[in-house]
Length: 98
Image (cartoon, helix red, strand yellow):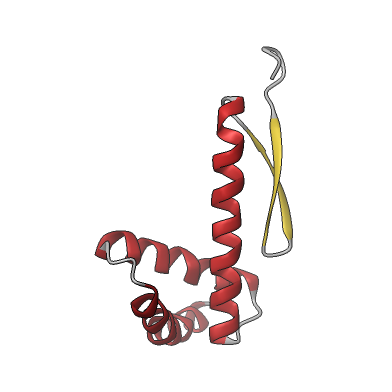
């Protein structure tokens, strides 16, 4: 990475491409790994909720990640159950304001 030009990595999440400037070249692998995880989560939530609206899927993903961080449980069966029940509730609430 040049001192004058920061390195840019292009990530793809939910069929959208985003260029990101890196603070250091060492961040590249971590950024790509995180983007892949977010993409996976969004696709799983979209599949389970049958929601195609990318904004709703992004909001649901953010809510689920925040809840998971707060709960610090991380169990996959528990996460699947949370996605199914929590997403329905959040979709209803999002629909009220969108």
